Length: 449
Image 1: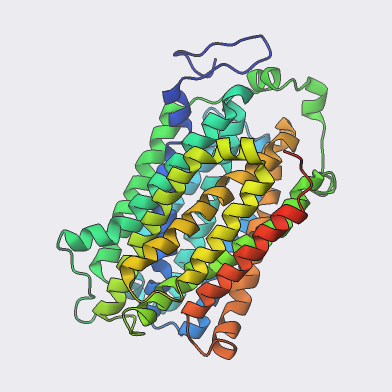
Image 2: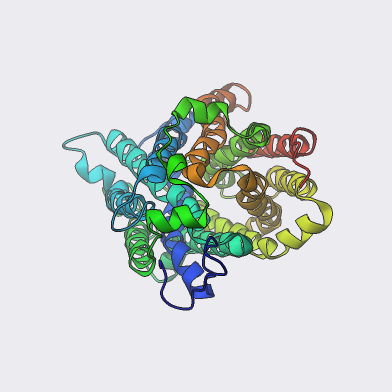
């Protein structure tokens, strides 16, 4: 058996029932992954700006993240579906991705120190691409691991625990620079430097947390053997040996996946706009500065981390009631409502000139974020064949990465030519896009659940 403590099989073809800590251990590594990911989304723009990036071209650096996901996640999904090692089928990818992510996190905030070899911007962009690519290698198998290991009767619990760990990691990652500032670490670059020590040390702590948490999952979780997995998922030897091409997998994808893609496009277009322009937006709107190396700008960056943490707390709390609300009113209706509230929260940031008022915005955004993390997967999951869960999750990631690529390409054009270099308007545009996503969630998705 894959687990030896407190696991019981209800029948010869049913997955064993797992206790709380077994389910917790399966997803614990996601805590560290999300710490690193939130450090990235909260600080990357300010790092590039500090190293001399043009604010109108900052969107081009952000294209690395979705481009990495677009390429990597389907490959990792397909590969992990077919991989069986002593560590399992998903864990080798999780561990390998974590090792590379941690190394990239140690190098990323120190880009300027490699100026004798490469320009800080080029080196930083390369580290960002490497970091995000390895994050993608790590994240995708975590979702497949829950599907592989947790029985259907506990699947809601499995993804709920994973969602909690994601949001807990987001809170820690978002707050680290603020906490270090409070602890006395300098929040302004030292003379001759470009990046504040609070950011550098945050990335060090984040990389260490990423490695330690993934190692915990690696050594505390034992995946099922091929024979056990086939038994628990009713896969015959003939089906296991059957070869299905990647293009046939796409052709036979469940229709609901493409229906979800419409809503996914507008919601993830909004999210990349939010992550790219919020720091610049609140720095100008509230701190009245555009100087990325100033203490005021770094205060805005730190406050953005606090706001991101608040958003994650609101998301975690909303996650607790999301399932009963969806059961009562329907998944599509709750999905629609949550996205519209999120859009209103994003638009409201344009009107607040007090930094504390932005917590109101974060409440709405947190509600939408919790729904984005849960509802698409809840709607899609029952339509996926067990044998190809990984590759379909990877293909579904196209609906996340493509809108981000589009946003990264057009963002700078819109900022310069439409909004006259006022970045808070880009956040408001994200709000409009999120409201459109909510409307499409109701009228396009045909699932009756």
